[in-house]
Amino acid sequence: MSNGDEAILEVKGLKVGIEDTPILKGIDLRIPKGEIHAIMGRNGSGKTTTANVIMGHPAYDVEEGEILLDGENLQEMEPWERSRKGVFLSFQYPQSIPGLQVGNFLRKSVSSVRGEEAARGSDFREKLNHAMEELDIPKSFLSRYVNDGFSGGEKKRFEILQLMLLEPRLAVLDETDSGLDIDGIRTVAKGINSVVKETENGALIITHYSRILEHVNPDRVHVMIGGRIVASGGPSLAILLEENGYDWLEEQVANGVDFE
Image (cartoon, rainbow, N blue to C red; front, side, top):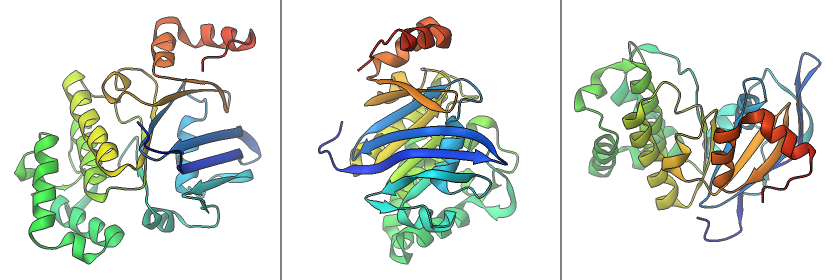
């Protein structure tokens, strides 16, 4: 839960398209420090586009609106600059990098984002060992190549391992729960909770289903339909949506129901 009202992320009136096709049609979103928010929606509702635009994906045209991180406009920044500022995107389909060992990748990533001192010596090793224990990742994992031959569950754990080491200001997690069994969801959720609670940073979880939200317990849940956030509320909104479906929610919104 937030210990203050200072916003980590503010998205204001965001309209986005690709090749003259509108996708996001006026998104407003605010995540205070120390809070976990979730966006739920059907395929094609605009969830992944929202994640990609926050990270600065060049395929999208931002037609209107602002994206602010700690009050600083990200619009003119390249993806690597946003990463340096503290934005982390967990990909729905992480790419493999044959030839690059996980251990070297993690050390270089931490050095690049948090500085060389953070990637040196016993402090780094202790933090790495702790995170791997939390996520049930064996030590042999460090000598493997990045995402090369990884199972779906291993890819998701590796994404959260990066999250725990980098401690980003804002973590955007796109379908992190897809392909995971219940034990995997619990493990990933534990990693997400530990990062946000220990650092008072923020997280935005993008998902189809409420399963991971049962273990993360978000502060706010937002529902996207047709490129718009049509409903927002507490964790109970995810339960209602799971029980009744998106058609039901659209009907409630059309009838003026407020889920706050």
